[in-house]
Image (cartoon, rainbow, N blue to C red; front, side, top):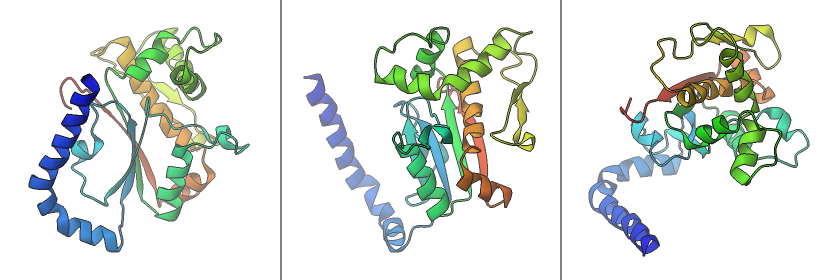
Length: 229
């Protein structure tokens, strides 16, 4: 019954879209059908409360959007044997090498269920995983755990956290993580995770080359979904 209700909502939404939004978007569809010119790539969480195209008010053809649990960017080292190549790596190449977008933005958010899970097992990464989600988080979220522990075991969150670049010291950057203590620890953890992905972007040679030529920028945003900001 619940599944039928869920599908009914999806179909109702499609019909509403056809009645209300589709007519106003037809010209946009015609333009992008002839030759889209996307400006950037957004990498966000799969969380149903994060609607990247609505947050950015993007129009058809403007952005590539990649979603996965925890808005994680797998480090380039994970793909060197070509056995575990994932959609994220392919999307980065499609957007940045083939379509030459000029900006990449990773968007994290509060109450991230994936990050909440990783936070809860941060001291047990040596134990067997209970499922594919834990596998994903353990492999690609380990850097976030290490960064969080630097602040957790030191003087606290009132000092800057250093994010070391992939290869060269000039890629290093520092950031304060909730210095006014407005968020719960798991949200601080999510904020660290969002910034950690910038470091992972730098691990891809084809991205690093464009960054060095000032043809590409990478940014991190974090949204508090309880306030819509």
